[in-house]
View: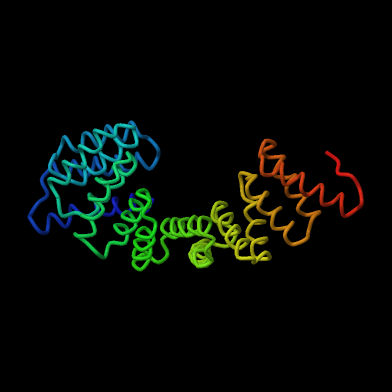
Length: 303
């Protein structure tokens, strides 16, 4: 992950900068950073227990290093020790209260726990410390979305994209929020906004590597806009991704049915039901397609 790579860079070069500014790096600090580096690498490999032990030792070696505490908090959180993780973040903030990334970490944890008011305060603190930090605006958008303040969330997402125009996570979340607005309000403005965000998002991936969920959402949006040929291409690509997804086949069958391609709709809905036989929307669509085909051929439908 990008934040882990950034952490590695900070740890690798932070000691040298510290040494030039304040003289030789204390041995305890050097040991703490080496242990932190090893702990971060262990987390990257999924070795949670090893990471927790290494980062605990890093904090014990040099308790006033906020970076060691920050990564120790991440390991504790991953291990399900939420209260201890928050305690480490709070200890790090006492050492470096003007670090917006620490406030963002606290915001993430509080939001996952459902503490929206505390999360909002942390996100706002990060913005106040660095208004140019796109991730801080994105975090406030997530908090406002959780609070049900969708218009404020949209404004914060757009502010974040002004600083991080190709951030995949922000683009996906923004498109999803516009899509939910569109389905609630039948508003074409939100459909077009969702389509625009998804177009940018899709362009960030090499051709053929677009994620299934992005293709599926983009297909749904284009279908709602009446652009059935575009929707068909997107949904067909989603159907080719692994693992097979009944929703993708169902949406593609709907597009084919709206296009008057009833036989193709039957083929796709059957393919979806082969994946998930109990998928009720596909079962209902199958009945509809069979009835339509029977009417076209002057026959009684077969069930």
